[in-house]
Image (cartoon, rainbow, N blue to C red; front, side, top):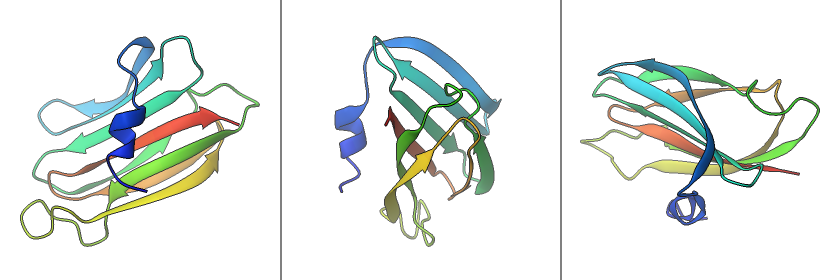
Length: 116
């Protein structure tokens, strides 16, 4: 998969927006539900400081299973030394799931979530 697939998939109109976590000027983690669907899109971005963040998916409907396509910084990602290092994978999640992300300096992650 290519990293641009997320941009192709992401909606432009929303039924719901949730700020999952934020520190103004430092980082933000946002979840948005595409209008008229059960698809969610989650994005996280950080400033020039690398950081770890655990996303709690409790905003998803209880009792349902979802497929998450995750686009995240690669292990050696760095906005100066290696800005194009990324990792893409799929994972089954529920409202009880939590995933830890290691965001590179000026990096982040994106998640496309669709019900199964």
